[in-house]
Length: 354
Image (cartoon, rainbow, N blue to C red; front, top):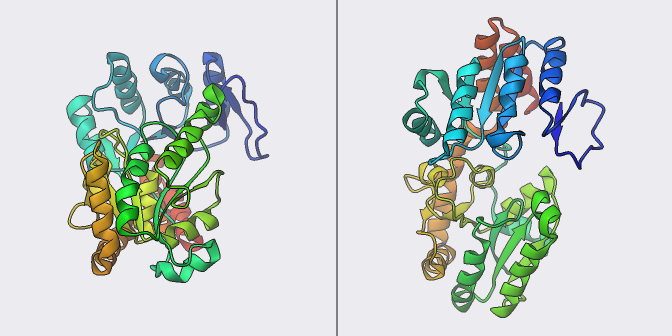
């Protein structure tokens, strides 16, 4: 099933049997009825901006038309929602058989700000590939990074990711480590491209040039697949998420960096504060290039610190590898569906490393 804006119609692979136009309420109801005839349980991924209607209220049209059980996975839980956002999310949680969040902070927020019964929530971590813990120097030659100290960020480009802060911090880093290279991997967010083209990325490029960082910032301007992304992660000496939104309750990029055993420097948004506790990373208050630059320098110049942080992150992430997450979902599906099919599915997923 695919949900798309009115101006996007695909193409989609043959596995996609149903399409929902984001702003057509009738599509949600008709698709829910059709899906109910061919599946035993439905997994709903909820993220603001994906579902149509005011505050994404059309997700409720879909859920209420289902005739089979549903599980909702929440990718965003706003700390200060509008009344409409709070009402939609609270009703979604009340309408499904189980709700999955990816952090303790998200579960606590749902209980305190949305009045959700904690017993209706399941905490299943964000999944990550099961990568080996490798020395970055072994990977760098394949990416033309020999002799460089690599600082990495990846993900869809857009405001609030804090890339400007990282670029502004880089002159102090380069002064101490002339071999430093900041690599930003990822395409610009498609919604941003539709609104303003590549103006945001071009602004980042201009910012780097204004600092005289032409040889110290590299943009990999495209979507990269799992194998290539894994190589970039394994080649990084330090991973940085300088996000500006401190309420962010999940970050796939941070999860992936932990799964690769990288040393991580981050602003203290909610997800980072939880996952990077106990020496698994270094947190820096947002808004200060000087503080971020100092933290990056500290990590770059201390190999023992980098190794210790990366090892702790890697060990913590073993509960996040896809096989473990698949088993968690399988057990939940089995419980919700009332039979063993979910458990069998989970065992299959674990066997193939899904």
